[in-house]
Amino acid sequence: MEQDGDFFRRTRRAWLQRALLGGTAMPLLLRDAFAANKRPNRMVEIRGEVLINGRPAKAGAALRSGDSVATAGRSSAMFVAGADAFLLREKSELLTAGGGILTASLRLVTGKLLSVFGRGSRGITTPTGTIGIRGTGVYIEAEAVCTYVCTCYGVVDLQAANAPEARETVSTTHHDAQRCIYGHGEKRIRMIETAPVTNHTDAELTALEALVGRKPPFAGPGTEFKR
Image: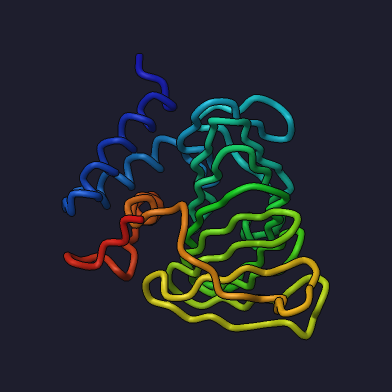
């Protein structure tokens, strides 16, 4: 007899393939996948070593408010929480918090996170800054010196942790504005600076949006971001 986790992985592969190819079967597959797993706050895919609250995690594992998710080298975790979906890359740690919305408040302690959000406000903190989310696709790399933020689409409010007066609202449609939020200002360096695009793709954003039954706003021929 096929286990729920096996069904979920098989179904997810099918709907991602169809979504990336522009197929029309995604909504039905999405419904069946979530029906098999009952709860929406779950690990979808795990590669390598992934820990939830310090314990080894498997695909299909449930996530609850207050859980931490950490990845080892050459590892990654893809998961869904309500209307939000995430790809946590290697050597990363993410802390969750929230009531009705598991991801209302997140802390990226270290590492790299690609995420897409449904309607409503969310907040992500890092060692050097705060990112206020408003229905956004966003890629973040958190380091001790600075936090890299690409607003892939949507609106974010950026604020430096050590300089409350250093803030900026960014609105983009397709990787139009990248920023670094620094932990400490230096001569000739502002606390929030422009930065180049790096380390994420439109295919990944499309796959994440497919997990929650949506398409990214840039979807369409001739608009692909491939870097």
